[in-house]
Figure: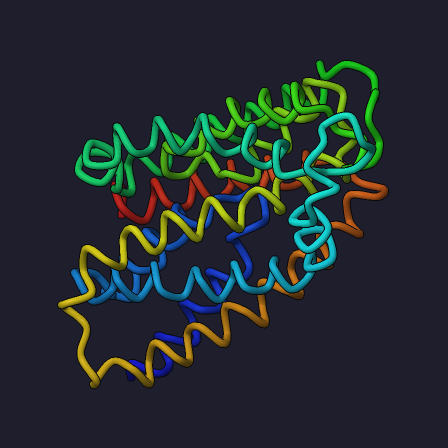
Length: 266
């Protein structure tokens, strides 16, 4: 299989799964293993194309980001999402992720740990749907800084590959009175700066391993990830207007069962 075909496949997988509650990391590990696309170049490629997916969210929520950066919106007592909300949502996971980055990369990036994360994350999402409190906040602009911080704490769960960043934050939002749409909007808005920092941190450490020969493959993966991520986010936000997270939880269970069979039984 040519590098360009692999770039398209991995780009599609990244774009489809990065912001849906199904774990992009888990899918990348599983699909990469199936395609025998592993090693240093594969790791760098997967980090690089994440920037394409991030760019799609920056584009979709561009008005929100511009509004948050205006000085008059930096007052937590004003209505609307502010920089304080974003900071409250990303500081917990950034702190824990920085401290445990080496441990996570060394011990948790494997099909077995991903399978565990898929099942645990699915169960967590179902629990959120069944036991969450009544909806107190229907719109992302009505989220309090306290709610943002609690969602940020739940995001720490996503450091386990397979658990899903969007799954943990959206489910966490449900537990604290956010509607599915508000929780998803906030999850995506705080994802961009968080992922940008994480991606650039990983890329800086392996930048010297890149060569001109991989540029075409990286460009294809980047563009494909951007386009597919844009479509998947727009679709998912509409889906949540009338549907729950249950379908994604059941999908995770099926994927976990298939992955277990593929890697440990056949």
